[in-house]
Length: 432
Ligand SMILES: NC(=O)c1ccc[n+]([C@@H]2O[C@H](COP(=O)([O-])OP(=O)(O)OC[C@H]3O[C@@H](n4cnc5c(N)ncnc54)[C@H](OP(=O)(O)O)[C@@H]3O)[C@@H](O)[C@H]2O)c1
Image (cartoon, rainbow, N blue to C red):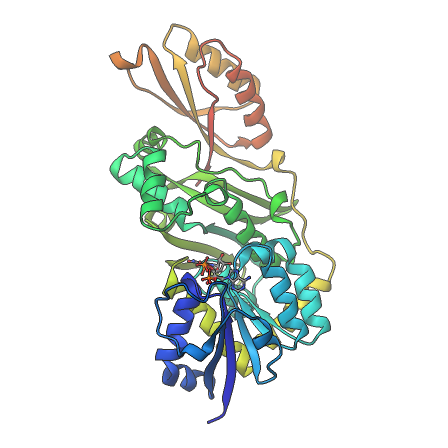
């Protein structure tokens, strides 16, 4: 059997999982690849750091040139996170003739077009299934298995940290702060979880998926996004009372006017499979015009789930399938964008609104008057009696009929200016 020499750059969480599979499951991988994958070098930053994988000493190096200058190594897994030096490392690998597999979504969301162009000029491929939803093979499914379809919509729970935090708040009534601390304790959230909880991470993944699914080139920073950091445990309880759960959703939906795109916490019906996605799991619902609804569910992060996607990409790379997929992607990229995002203010939905108000006569009338003045009609209202400890502060929850985002934001601004309103209105879209 032939052998292909491969290398890994970065031996952290994912790199360790990839090394385990290459070293311990060589026979199985060889059966799938039709050739042996031989790990020749692993590049790290700190040679003295203890590792969770037993590596022959001569494999480990801190010198990238031992990979780039070695013509025997043809495929490289690049698992250094962030933008720099990851971007420079990618360029050096491509320029030295290596095909690359990466899980670095932040890099692809920021510099993907430039890196893809460079790879194309050099006749190389970049495979990146692990960059979106970790172990769920969503990139391959959208770009290959569903290619007979015009994708109509994508609804994804793409950030496991946020899903874990929301699940903790929902299941145990924990506060947002306590749930984030628990996510950090279990290793799901970074010491600085900002990019997760403010929706940026999900927007980066959505930007990659909408390029593949719709041929739309959208920078992730242009995707309207809200995070989960303003959610209160009370919102999850009110949502349950109304027959819903709250999830951070990344949404892309094709409508006559273009593509509706956003990342935001939303109410999803209790009986929707999205409502059942718990803890650090991810899920994506894809609707294609031929296939209808297809669901994907699994772990979106973690050592072995992510390594599963990386190694599958590595096998695709050494057998030549990744090059075919990559060429198709490049043809797709060079066409004019097929769809463009529509103005978010015109996007319509039902909405959940929570107002924290001083409980005095006429407040409800003032709020409903403003909603009516903005052509927003009310589907239902919840108001619980004030508890003694809350000193006459009550939460008032309104579910609206379908209206536009623009109308809701305008009404919320007017309501926030009322004397009786003690905190900015919580506005959440409803996915029916
Ligand atoms: N963790 C997940 O569950 C997950 C899921 C999906 C995607 N991803 C993505 O996968 C990538 C890797 O994530 P990770 O969690 O494995 O990261 P990590 O645990 O922080 O590991 C990063 C590795 O990169 C090495 N490194 C950093 N700078 C380097 C340099 N200049 N030269 C050589 N090596 C260098 C580090 O070396 P030392 O060990 O010597 O410090 C470390 O081994 C990231 O882009 C991440 O977003 C991760």
